[in-house]
Amino acid sequence: MIDLSTDCAGIKSPNPFWLASAPPTNSGEQVMRAFEYGWGGAVWKTLGQDPPVINTTSRYGAIDIGGQKMAGFNNIELITDRPLEDNLREIYEVKKRFPKHAVIASLMVPCERSAWHEIIDRAMDTGCDGIELNFGCPHGMSERGMGSAVGQVPDYVRMVTEFAKERSKVPVLVKLTPNVADIRFPARAAREGGADGVSLINTINSIMGVDLNTLAPKFSVGGKVAHGGYCGPAVKPIALNMVSQIATDPPTRGLPISGIGGISTWADAVEFMLLGATSVQLCTAVMHYGFRIIEELNAGLSDWMEGKGFSKTSEFIGRAAVNVVDWKKLNLHHKTVASIDHSKCIGCDLCYVACNDTAHQCIAIDRRKGNRKPHVIEADCVGCNLCALVCPVDACITMNNVKTGHKPLSWEEYTASGMKGHKEVYKRMHG
Image 1: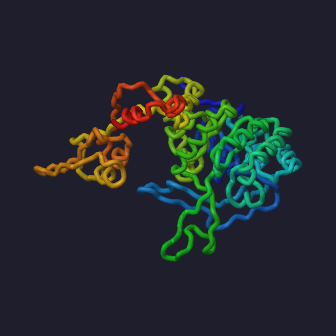
Image 2: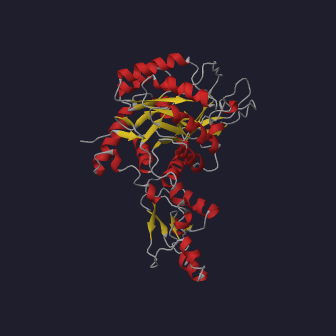
Image 3: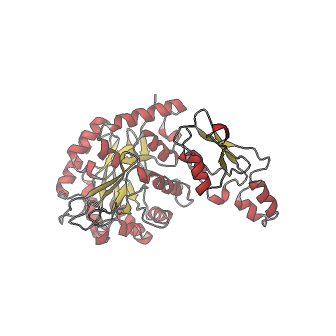
């Protein structure tokens, strides 16, 4: 039997898939419907104090890449504009109806101990399973001294986390902003403040473009635009990097992580979990395709686990994180060379143009006797991968490992030896 259940910082759910704090979790009716479809948890759309939140129109924007709709998604929507009392009552009703599903209250109030104590006391009455402190929202609320205005200052992260822990009777997750120079510093501050875990990434500052006909920004509000939060499939590599940084940083190693950022498929989720996330949160994919994608997420994860011989999610969480290292630890003697399968080559010349115009001039075309197929000059190939990346035919160009006859050597080891034999090492690496 495959067990998809997870325990993220003490927050248990029947599977690792949570709805992120966003429009899909704006009401009890939505969350209950999501749970009926099979979602494991939901982080409620962020709650604040009762003074009204007023949104603008339009508030969403997107870019399409290569025919993929909403490859990047932008929003300037604020936290919930529904009355706090209504949200708290619905959280209570959802938790009562779905006791085995994770319900997390996302909160955002000014950096005052009394404000945080008051809203957390009220959240505790709902029976929620956890609290998520929204230190990530990059627009609107940050201009009021909340959201990413807190998350960008480690001292504030630590202080407000302490405020929350003074009152919370359930696990506290700190949602981190990616709009910082180094994600490890706010993560360390969260742990120092007593956080039970972190969730990341929140959205990235962005402007979606300019209309070349009207000369006005795209997705504008009366011709004006403010930077918004960027998410969707395009941000996944950034999110994976930041998750891995926290998973491998000694001061935060072992800190539970709820991974967020561009997750659209079960395979995306597995990548986050292999790099250290215990649960994953989705938003853009749900807004694109609806709640029923959970059926494919659960089925895909279960099939993958069975194929790999895993019976529980805990057996593979973090397994890939150890392979993320600083550049200085990479093997300088590792060598790959490109190989072109002429039976698959369509003669488009993309690899030839890319290599000769922008890389290392390692591909040639012998046009004699009508031959238009490119070939690799192996002695010159530096193994950069560019030709394989631009090739439109699957597996036509592969990168093959080449035995160099030399022991692994990292830059760290090389410099530690006093950089002796520099010319010899260079010759080994470049022939």
